[in-house]
Structures are given as C-alpha cells and as structure tokens.
Image 1 (tube, rainbow, N blue to C red):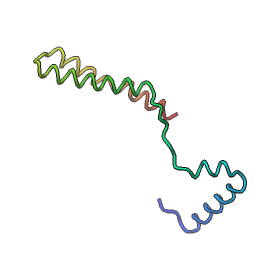
Image 2 (image 1 turned 30 degrees about the vertical axis):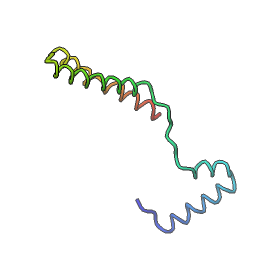
Image 3 (image 1 turned 90 degrees about the vertical axis):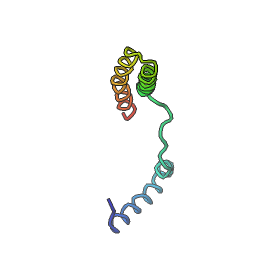
Image 4 (image 1 turned 120 degrees about the vertical axis):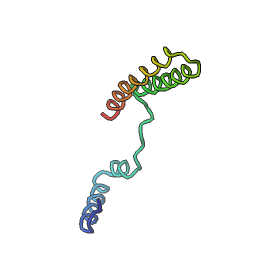
Length: 92
C-alpha cells in the first residue's frame, strides 16, 4: 500500500513530534525490529517430532519394517499440533 504525499508529510511530522516529546521511544521505533531469539517449547517439540517421524518412515522403508513406517507416519501427522500451538503462543 503506497502512501500519498500528504500522508508521508503527516507521518514525518508525527515522527518529528515524537522525537521532540520522547526521544528514547522515537529511537526504539526507528530501529529495525529484531525477532525474539527465544523459541516456544511447542515449536521445538513439534520440530523434534517431525524429524523423528521422518527418520522412522525412512528407516522403516529401508529396513522394510511396516511398523516403523506406520508409527513414523502417525508421528508426522501428530507433529503439527505442538508446533502450531507453540507458534500461536509465541505470537501473543
């Protein structure tokens, strides 16, 4: 969405007013946003389950072990739940 020339002027004026009123806040807002390095536990659990499920499916396929393939598929199907829950919690 492009801003009109008038909107850009108004935004610049607001930025200058903020810099005069609260220089610390203006500096914080002018810095590029940094993502939090902390990952929610649900995301980590989901990723571990995803890798485990893939390994089980591939290993079961290579060894012709249908039980390992089936369990791996179940783990792969279930890995989205903690991953999604962790992603939603991290956004809040």
